[in-house]
Amino acid sequence: MTLLSSTVQPPLLSLLSSTSSPALSPLFIAVTDPCSSNSVITTVDDSQQMEKAGSRVTIPKNPARGSIADQVIHIQSPDLRRTYIQAGCSQMAFRQSLKGKERDEIMVPLGVELPWIGMQVKRLSRRDLSFEVGVIDSHGREGVIRCSSYKHDPSIHPHRSPPLIHLPLSLSSSEPFSELTPWRHIELDLSSIIPLFQGLARKHEEEEENGSRKKRKTEVELPNGGFGSVSYVRVYANCRIRRIWFTSEGEKTLESGGKSVRDEWALHAAQNISSL
Image 1 (tube, rainbow, N blue to C red):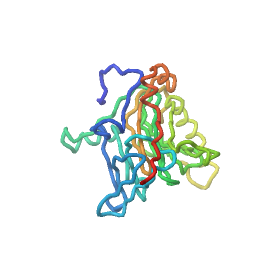
Image 2: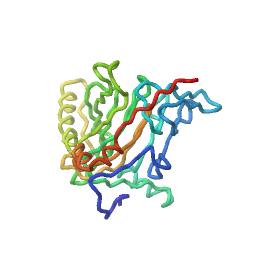
Image 3: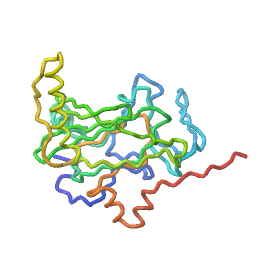
Image 4: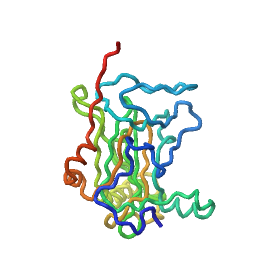
């Protein structure tokens, strides 16, 4: 069972648009760190300051150089792992939830069958950020693809359930002071990443054999077939998000959508208005 079971999916599917109302649709849950008053998920104008009364949370002012003229979803936390937004859930989490929760409380896997994921995101200052996508191959085997700005080399956790590969995410330019905007338009071809589960697992096993650690048997099957679907998307702190979407052919799909789609996806700069 998935959210999009038995539905015809268009070549361009928008999962999140911060300019919609509400900005965070009912598809998403928002989880903040209960141990920190500086953990917050909210909607702000990217060019303006906003303070949260009764806490030490201050959302940066300006309009900062490179801000866009849109409201965006703001996610921040001292511990990025404990603050995030998520749509859908893994197959394993879905099966486990069926055993102990009421039906209307259960999250359901998305079932998005478009292999490209895209997002428009900006990290907060130089803080690290991370996001992950649950993928299911054509044989029904599930894995998690996580991308993080603090990673330098790809790694795999084959004994995790579902297994996870962790990839570096580069958000900085080689010439940061010449950037027009700190916003990033990210697109990933998930079908091209799935083979990494097997490739990184072989490397991981070789390292275990050559090192002092005893080789452990992988208890779950690693994804290895073609792309099947996306089960969930999770975006951690610390960042601002404008849009998350799926396409059949990446940038080619956006270009084929014509001027209306290109205008909708454009990152328009905010006006820097001098204070009186």
